Image 1 (cartoon, rainbow, N blue to C red):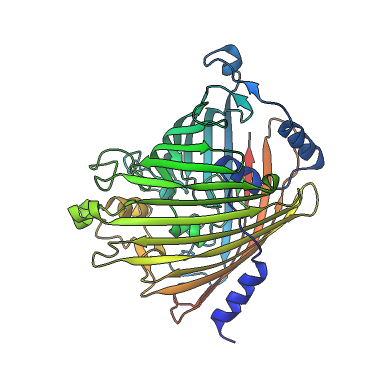
Image 2: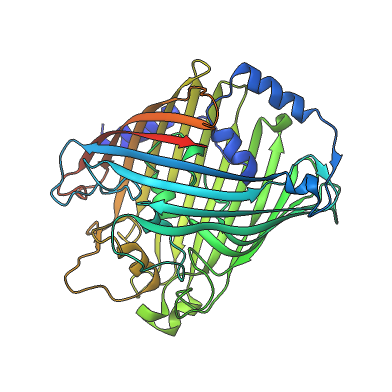
Amino acid sequence: MSKSRNWLLASTTLAVVAFAAPQDARAQAQAATPAPAQAQEAAAKAEEPPKPAPDVGSAEWMSGITFGAQAQGGVIFNTSSPRNGLNFGQLFTDKSNQATLNQLALTLGRTIDPKTTGFDMGFKFQFLYGSDARYTHYLGIANFLTSARYQVDITEANVTMRLPILTEGGIDLKAGLYPTPLGFETIDPSTNLFYSKSYIFNFGLPLKHTGLYTVTHVNDVFDLHLGVDTGINTTFGNKAGDNNSAAAFLGGFGLNLAGGKLTVLALTHIGPENSTRAVGSIANYRNRYSNDILITYKPDDKWILATEFNLIRDDLGFGNGPVNAGGAAQYISYAISDTWALNGRAEIFRDDSGFFVAAYRSNLGPVQALGGWPVPPYSVPITTAPRGTTYGALTFGATWKPELPKPVGAFMVRPEIRYDQALTTNKPFSGRSNALTIGADLVISF
């Protein structure tokens, strides 16, 4: 049996059903399974009747404002010890055999209670310091303050509103800088099952947007998602904040079925994403299509079964025609106790032209590639596969999440073992056709 068939069989064995929910529900589904007392509390809240929203600016409204801090750090050991020190196929965990501070995030905000009726308003501002900032930059915000591994970024700066109009469920609106609603995994490490990220998260999806995003709750089953933004990881102004002069569209729908145990989210993001600095004005007229379909089935408080399907296409590619990539990832998580969960992920991702999957040797390489800025002559910032490659990856791990006294809000340790394999004749992993990595991270919040 061929390597490709072996990997397809492994993925099919894990594949059951898929994950995708509206953004707020997504984080809840991805978190470690709650303890029985927490589950009972969540169920009680779900049965609470709707309540009027407090007046904006009132003492009750102000009491909902919170400030928090979260830190994440870890290490990924690559058994082949690549000479360039990079774990190819991994961006946020790209440094092999080196302890890393991924994130130190400070967050100020107010979350709208989903049970409130009438008009309500919230906001969120989040500052991030760490190695992850190399990949999460918005163009135009703190891009070149330092060329060190640890950089700064504004991951969120937005206003949210509950608008009781058009439908009984109303419209949720978000405006400003915000993470993409596409995808299973998130920038926030506390909502993920693993330390390392999937190929889909790294190479098949946007990370952040600047614009306007709405979710219209048409009824208890159907949600309509619509948005307009400046593009992928961009802000305003094509001289520094955007890589072209065109807007992008975000849209799709969500389904809430089986009393919320089964949810579906199908979203697309469409717009030009190449840089006019690199290819000229043609960049404004050649779109990139990021499509994601996710379904989740959470039959009880112990199981999370999730599959993600992804397809991305760029009309311009290397400058001479369209390029395509995409794949599927299956997640499974089972809580064996109040504090321990076992996790698995199987993924296949095809990059037809070697355009999307890359590794960056320079700390400024990601933002330079996004913005189309020239790179220093001494730097070789981008490493790609020499031709189209199909990647397979299996990841197994665990989450230990004990309950600690205040002021600790959450504490989790996630060991994992991951095996990547090129299912074609390429050897993209530093001259090897495969890579075995072993690592763990710690996430703590206050």
